[in-house]
Amino acid sequence: MTDWAKVQSESTQVPDGLSATLERLIRDGNISHGEKLPAERDLALMLGVSRTSLRDSLRQLELKGMVDRRPGRGTVVLNPAFAGVGPDLLSKLDRSERDIREVMDLRAVIEPPITARAARRATARDIRELHAIVEKMERSSPDQAPEIDILFHQQIARATHNPLLGQLVEFASDWINESRPAAGFSDQRMKRSIAAHRRIVEAIESRDPESARQAMADHIERVIDLVIGGNDE
Image (tube, rainbow, N blue to C red):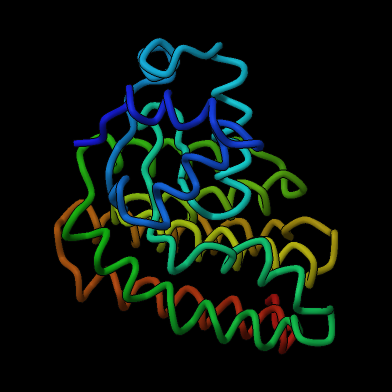
């Protein structure tokens, strides 16, 4: 259990203050990766700082890949060995290294097993959110669909309750956004995507990891055929 009074004392003795202290404690293992931090209001009181100062410090740590922050779940400390893998990796790869073929190949490798894990670990709330996203896509226009599609895939990764997997899918989503055309989905692609998403959610809801893995693999293969092969019949 982290001694937050000690953190408060140390943060007043270093030039960069709270953010630097928290980063050092995470890297040294004094704040364990996987640990969920207290709620912002409580933690600000423990540390004797304003919520604004605390929020700024946590935002700096999030940008460095030291913590993962989610509305409704709070802040979880990540493994410092992976710090910098996210935004820094994205910035190091130029457009030629983020070719849409490689991006889609990455998705084909990582997303089916992630979906299988979601089938094992998803809570009832996770499944409700997946259903809500599919229903939102059904009500959306084709130009809104790509953004909702990204939310769907990110929510599946979150349903694994492994923040690193969630980050990995988010980074892949960033690469997809940079690589693909700005145009929205065609009506036909919308229908196909919604049907595929429903099959994936049904497999997750049924707690069937193999069916979930296969449903996601089939979906990505169809997307690859569309994006790279131009087949949108």
